[in-house]
Image 1: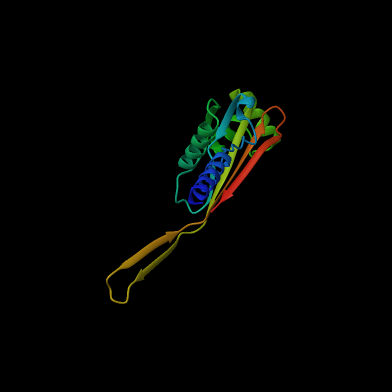
Image 2: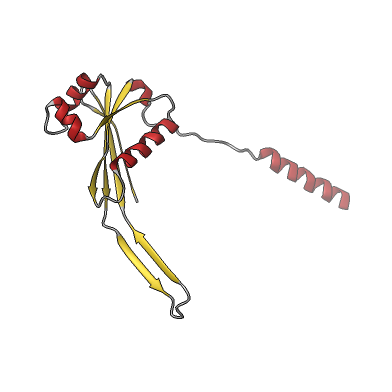
Length: 162
């Protein structure tokens, strides 16, 4: 009897391992950026407290794109002020997007805005004066858009906050 019980447990264990399956699920990107040829990147604008440099925010975003989609061709154009001055426009509208495409020879234009809240510091000291804790909290939001330079149409937009 003990033998049958051991055999049954072994078979159930093997069946359990045989049914177990590890599946890797990959989520394809919402948009294949390679399809747009060369993408002109305008340095992201910052709104609010400047606790980070606009160039650093843009660099990290571009690094994420190239990590997720290797081979994407990105051309860094500079700040929105510089780019708009180069094309003789005051704002980043439909005509400006088309003009950027013509001026720089890009097929799409990537823009973004990073909004940062005021820094909220906090400090605490234990009652026995044996330990202390200091923190600084900042809230931020990042919005990005990819627009075709021929039509000016937005083909992708994304946002994150935290």
